[in-house]
Image 1 (cartoon, helix red, strand yellow):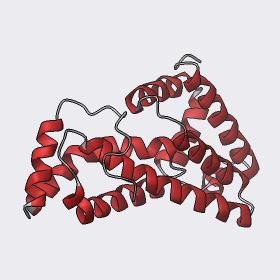
Image 2 (cartoon, rainbow, N blue to C red):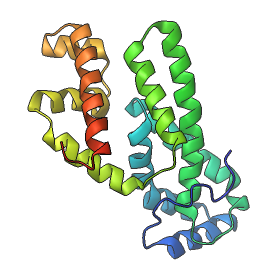
Image 3 (tube, rainbow, N blue to C red):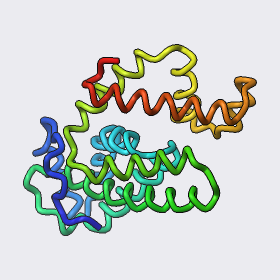
Image 4 (cartoon, helix red, strand yellow):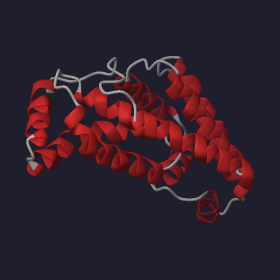
Length: 199
């Protein structure tokens, strides 16, 4: 587990005091407060995980594991307005572990695209974060610039979590066409995001 209050550079929002209040209640044994904490933070945590994960199933696993670790370790949290960053630090640690494992597995299985996505996610996580909300806004702007067919491919692969072969059957294309096109789209999106959201 990462050290408590890791990743403090991430934006906290205006509810740090409310979250710290929930943390204190959880530390006192209030299980309803934990559910309130999940409701208050899950959306941001999912957005954070989605930026780096290679699939929706990985996002689900990372978010679930983050809250399990949070519940187990909340006694160690020192309430000082950094609970969101503390949660994202846990998620970052879990993402790195999962992405490295995914990259190794894809190397064995010969899944080149998935291996490249996992490696790119790991590299991005290891670099200093420039602000999650800003990256999400850039990604959204870049997605809107894509052609309709490219947007559909992204939606089917990363929102609907469909396998490449399933997308190929759905679109009546070859699996290699889908894989190569997704790779090109992702490369285009990365360039766009680095340019500040302008395609």
